[in-house]
Image 1 (cartoon, rainbow, N blue to C red):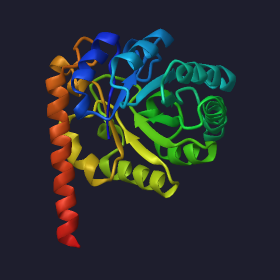
Image 2 (image 1 turned 45 degrees about the vertical axis):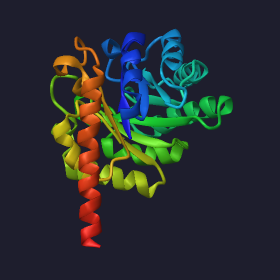
Image 3 (image 1 turned 60 degrees about the vertical axis):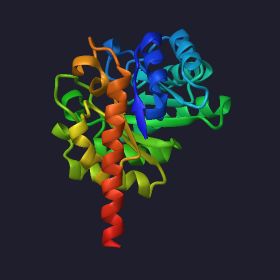
Image 4 (image 1 turned 60 degrees about the horizontal axis):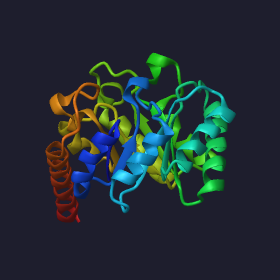
Length: 250
């Protein structure tokens, strides 16, 4: 699945023009971090701007180790219309802390909307900010009752996912997630050139912003429907090649 992250209602309208090419519209505020939370009214407006059949995801933020605060924020996101709730476990330094935060999120979200989808998100460059190891995320998601484990990058300095967690290690992340019955989501300055490896390792959700923005700039560029369509075409090409290779091997 392809997840695209507009940061405004205007960009969401551009995503709506490319709705046939994407699977999830993700609401975030890039100037507040890689998983920066946007305002409740922006989530509501974007929910109203994209087709009813397109799920809306919302980031809760690069959160501290404050389980009650984060649970409240997650509830606000789901009340505002998001059906996928993503939490960046930025301030959690141990798996137990991360599990405690995510258990609060899962209860807050699913008490309100049982079918909502909760994503425990960590950082491929965790070593730069001192949070939990990337490969701990699948077990954190499993223990907390989350639905998916995700990796992004915390520091947006031009480096990407594979610069910090190589493809084979990302493959282990995906394997651990699937073993736990979870979806595996990967993001972090992902480019079209990364799609071959992401497809090969069995990634369920690919998250992008900069790759579909004008000039490739997540902060100053704007999402363009033609770039979304081109990225999706490349994603589908790799999926078809991988499927053909599996069929030939079988």
